[in-house]
Length: 167
Image (tube, rainbow, N blue to C red; front, side, top):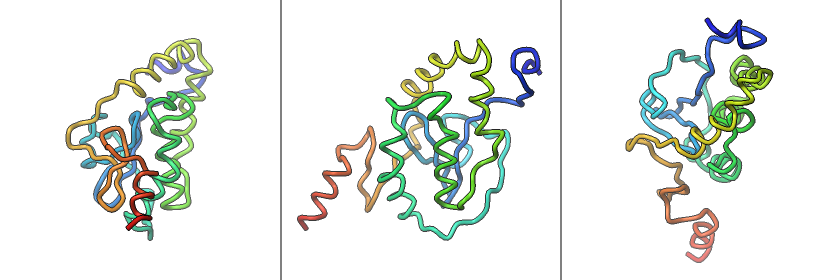
């Protein structure tokens, strides 16, 4: 492993994370998507950790994502160290299960930022992963009552709420 020579502590890797629930993998890659588990644009997972079972329903998760997470996890707000897929996965895990993802995953960006190389790569990774990541065609955006809210959508959440109020 190269990490002992360039990092202040040993890292197995710098991981992309997503959360598998309701038969789909939810993840942040500039925008928020869900897809077939293990078949996202980030490739096949090296490690899968069982986090537990939720009592929340899929519609509740989608409402949480649209109301709480979509304003925070955007292409413009993506930051490889401070607002990345691991932060998204942690927020979803806290909502669904009431517990954080493993600390060693959340700490990876901080460890990387302790090095000159990590600080140098941060803006490049932020741009590539936040602005240029293209999900697979099979990925879907979060929707409520069949209406999507995301970059491929023609609706904004406020438009949907206004339409729902006039019915």
